[in-house]
Length: 101
Image 1 (tube, rainbow, N blue to C red):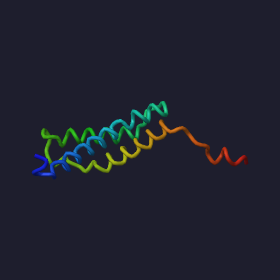
Image 2: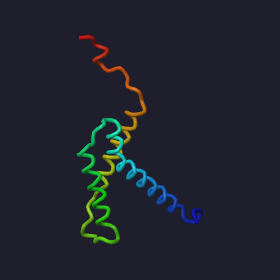
Image 3: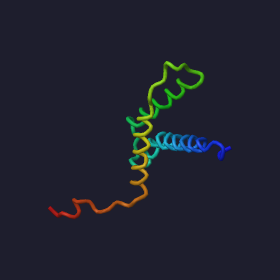
């Protein structure tokens, strides 16, 4: 089927991309809590907004309740990538350690 219609492969890859982004966005508060040992209220609010509007605009809800939540998902996913980098990569010397005064 893919040889006849190669566009199906692109659509499938786009779906996998958005599933990965949504997973990263939802796990952001959990990683933040693991790193800082406190619950991030602002990021939790964004994740709950995504979840609530995803449920409201599901096939059960109406189309009038849809809002564009892609920017929220992108922001949280990028922040999650930075958190993963902060957790996995050891800290390098800061400028305060290099300059003694």
